[in-house]
Image (cartoon, rainbow, N blue to C red; front, top):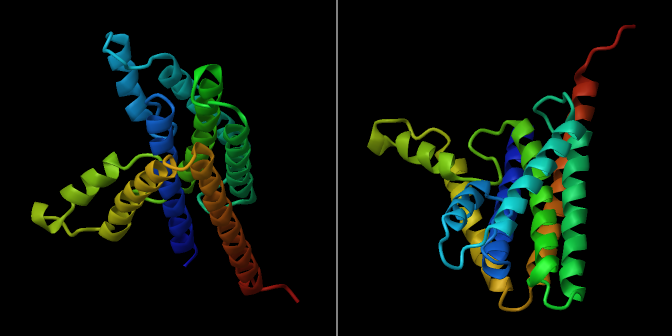
Length: 231
């Protein structure tokens, strides 16, 4: 039951990644802040001299994503696969950071232009890197929160059409659909204002963090009650 709750919360974070990637790519000069594969491709095209393809922001996003993932790994330490209080700390930092960035975008004039836009995409990439590190440590198969390419491969290659048993097809399909819906939602919020989408992401991550943390506490209490005590 606990792992199902963890899976559900990571799917919520997958949805939020779709939102931030749409906001970054459409609103901040073709920068992916969660999907680093996309940034590597964009960076390669930019370095080749393709017209209107950025280099600086995708490169910085990649670097800061790795920094965020490294710091996340340092905070997580040697915890196991279950939701831990350090997992809560990581996701809380990500939620608070997204909330701060939504305020930053709301108050800064033309936040997508120049150094202000670069600061935004770099900071958001660092937060997504930390989130991805925590999600990876939980080892929920097929759900990384930041990419769905391997999930799509598993969905197709393990399908009955391919002679497989369609193992974990529900979570795989949900991950793909949720990142898609997140991208649609992120693009839609740009029609209003950039800060709205980031604020929504902050709320979504905060809700997932609270629910996941409470679920972990309940599991710990249940395990403690089930443990026999010596008379």
